[in-house]
Length: 139
Image 1 (spheres, helix red, strand yellow):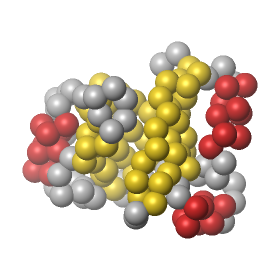
Image 2 (cartoon, rainbow, N blue to C red):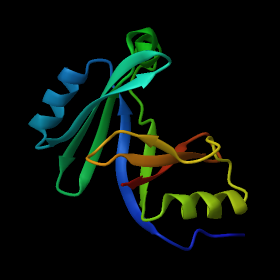
Image 3 (spheres, rainbow, N blue to C red):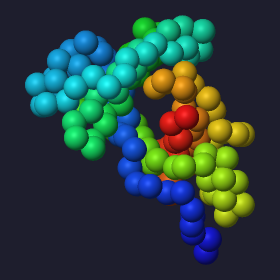
Image 4 (tube, rainbow, N blue to C red):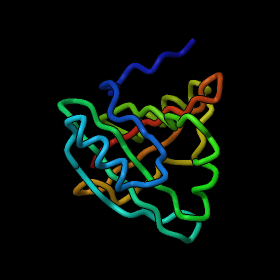
């Protein structure tokens, strides 16, 4: 069994899909979180919103999908953590190691998005029960 040996630093953030980003920001602010980053993003030709809320070393990624996809999130009922993200120092190295080890990777290569100051790159790995594990490098 191959084990990822390099540049794995621990949990970076927890991704939570929300139906009302402003209501969720207020909720997490009441829990002592502060806004660390707010950005819009493109998805299927429409625009969504993302807010990284931070308290000490915990970061919650709150994201609201475009209106056409909100109904799916509402139907989930009790809410759902969408993914857990692990911080890595070298995204390309982590991608190569996990691919070589036979992990099921959702992307063909690490994906760049314009988050934080200089962007970030990530890829997702599917766990045995469908859980989504994101590996992410803040650039």
